[in-house]
Image (cartoon, rainbow, N blue to C red; front, side, top):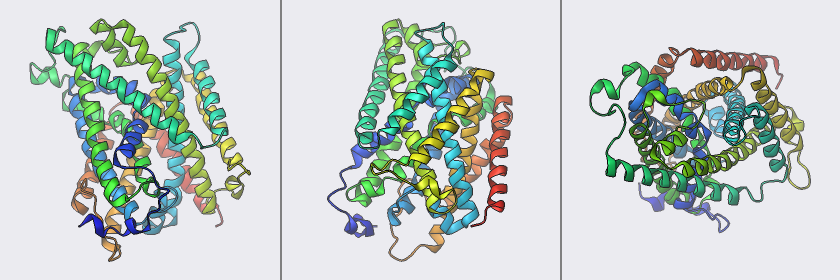
Length: 449
């Protein structure tokens, strides 16, 4: 396909300002959050040094889903979430289920990010409960969202630069130490097969649930079609830059961590980046990265909260949620969706007072299973769209190889889902996710449209 033939380029307006590089930067910044900075310790705990391959493998899966999503969104730009396509090709029930799962997944992500923020704050003030900090952080995020969306793009771009910069600094310092001193830990993680796969292939596969969670923010890119000038030229570039950029940052970061810290000594209660910096002798840097991660986590929470409000408004507009939720003020604030999102997210975080930081594990696993479901539905929608697309819908993303690529990815995701159930904490997350999906399905039957 020639880029000039793309149907959407003709509909573009001068108001669209984003190009490939700015979109990729926002995408990378939006993906990198506490799920990676803190949750990666859980993945290392499961996979050991082979976590490097896990993040590479996860990047391949992510690229297929991103390719499927952008293929449809460029050909059929719509305002709102991907659930619009799902409802069109898979029916109203699936669209209803996906919409509410996206909302609840966002709430769970908010909870996990808030708890992670509490953990980071506890680094400086150890005498205060992380749960108290988590609630305070969430209240701040709720207040910021009340101000409106005028400065969101600016704030998210700055935070993206900060997160990318700290990872580049971490990689540069780590690689410099490794080149100078070699891998100076008790057991070289790359010396034998068993040292690289200490928990065997099963441990590697079990870590993939956490890895998927760290990539779960890719949907923001697929929804940006209306914000990009020459979308059929700029978005394909952005998806390639995003994929290569995020995978390289993740994979090289994991290489530095397992090369500077004994994987078995990784403490899942603190960021592995802090532990790595400390082992490298950069204690000042470990304090710095905690501060940067804290700010970056706030940016992810702000964006996630905004997304939850928007999906409620979208569901309300489709008459799949109370109509009052789409009511907006003169300033464009969706007051009732804002209040609903805040109330539910605070309720989730308050549960941390009972379960402690263990709740972080449960929230990640629950949200990851929702990501599995979301990605599978996206891929199925893509397969059906390929069969039913109109003659002028000619754009195909270079990231995915048609129906075959989508089918293989679905099979891989299902295999990873089954294997992940071998971890007890993940099973609890699966039961939570399954119960929520069943409740949503029952509500669909009870609601009169």
